[in-house]
Length: 219
Ligand SMILES: C[S@@+](CC[C@H](N)C(=O)[O-])C[C@H]1O[C@@H](n2cnc3c(N)ncnc32)[C@H](O)[C@@H]1O
Image (cartoon, rainbow, N blue to C red; front, side):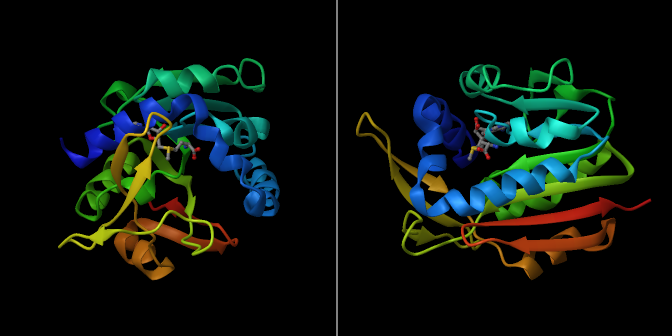
C-alpha cells in the first residue's frame, strides 16, 4: 500500500485511543503552554484545519476564532472530535483529503492550521501540498503547523530512512499489529527553505516535545 494510505488506515484503527499520546506525563507542561498559544493564534480568523484527527487542537484553536472548518479523511477520528466541548456554532466538520483539498471547492480562508500532519507528508509531496493549501488561502492569511520534536526518551525510535530522506517508525496498535509510519522531524531551516518566498514573516517556536512554524501567505 502507498505510505499515505497506510497512514490513513493506521490512524483509523488507532482513533479510539489516539489521545493516549496526549496523556504522556512528560508532555503535560508543553501541552498546557501550546493549548494557550494556539488559542491566541487565530483570534477573529476563518480557519481551515487539516487532518484534525480527534480534535485535541480544534477545541483550543477555535476558542477565539470567527469560524473553524475542521477536516480529516477519517470519519472515525472526526466522530471523536465532534464530541469535544467546542465553541457553539463556530466549528463545523467535513471529510476532506488534505492532499487535494478538492472537497473544499472554491472556498477560501484567512488562516489554516495542521497539527501533527507536516511530519507525515513525504518530503517529495510537501511543495505540492503547501501550494494546494495556499490556493485556498487569501493573501495575508496566517498558517500554523504544529508537530512533534524527536525526544529520545519519549519518541518512538526511527527504524529507517529512505532515499528521499524520509524517516520511519514501527508502531504497534493494541491489536498487536505493527505499522511502519513515515514520520519526519524537520529542522527550522528545512521548513523555511521549503516554503521559500511564498511565506512571509516566518516564525519557528520550540517547546521540548513539539515545534510550530507559522507564516503569512504572500500577496
Ligand atoms: C497524527 S494524526 C493528527 C491528528 C490531530 N491533528 C492532532 O494533532 O492530534 C494524523 C491525522 O491525519 C489524518 N489523515 C491521514 N491521511 C489524511 C488525508 N489524506 N487527508 C486528511 N487527513 C488525513 C488521520 O486520519 C489522522 O487523524
